[in-house]
Image 1 (cartoon, rainbow, N blue to C red):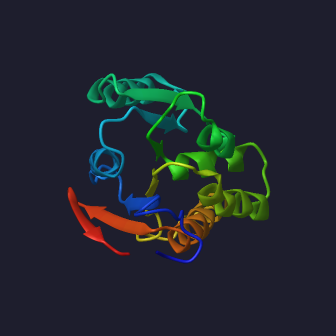
Image 2: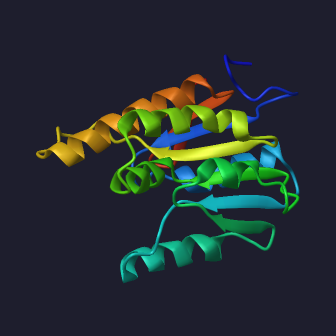
Length: 180
């Protein structure tokens, strides 16, 4: 068990990170099935379909999941979506933390407020919970202040969540590597 992790018997708070299209979501869905067999599971979606391409992505994700999944949209109030117990979920998957950070950033939340909100997330869970996030700091330095601010915030949030996790995974090219 790690510092600040979920508690109980076995993994309760799991971080899955990696690059875009690395297989993070599929791995997270399978891992949640291992941690909370049989479901039902709550899928907490932070994305908003602002255009046709994003709507198509969301539709593909939903089509891949079966009837055991109950979707709850939470573009900003993620703690409430994690704490809600009204659907009887055996486990929760949050996809994705970096979109959530983007939503808060564009809603004029302070950097400290975003990091504090992220640090509180592991304490909001009562069932096995997996959070998916993007590793955005491995590329070039962004050319504008907003993009650099986002990259830095995403890195800080990922560090806080990893420090509080019972498990942390890096997925690259569809292959998971356990970090913790």
